[in-house]
Image (tube, rainbow, N blue to C red; front, side, top):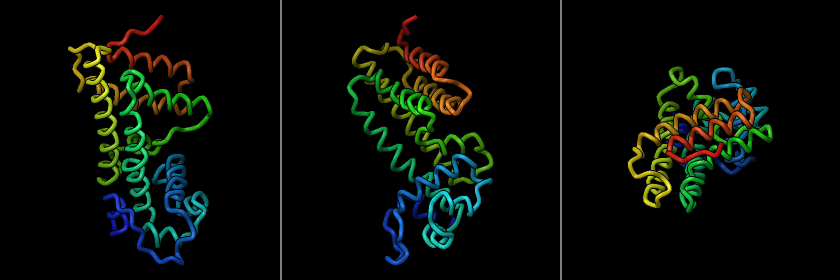
Length: 215
């Protein structure tokens, strides 16, 4: 990875390119790049695909992001460092721990019902082809899953303190199971399962934390 990619992977946000080169919003074009990579995968995505999807020219991609590889890492880093982190912060403040635990599943089902893909689809795409990606991408995927697992563990512990979840439940083990279930849930939401089938999987998530599911 060149210097541009390293800065993005470390959360670098100060843009050093000259004003005449900035004819676009960096966050917006990264969002567009994420959609392209999510649909086609890293290897199958060409610079021409990115030019078309991002709405900027080839020179801007190279001058701003350093090339396809660094752009890919920048997209992953933005999701993990900004979008996922912000989403989990919002969920952390929910007072009902069970509702908070189920909210990620609800969001995915909501997008599925509308024929859309929830944010973070690229992380799942990379995870499905994990061994074939470089260390930077693998580390960002693991960071993403680690953040999700920490969120689950925190809300399970809150539920135990409030009495909503049994105190003898192993919070860390349950959090790992929920994270694994969420990853599979995201894969199935891409078309293999409809909303009703996804609801059945969500019920399994409730059972993992010892919450009874109405028949």
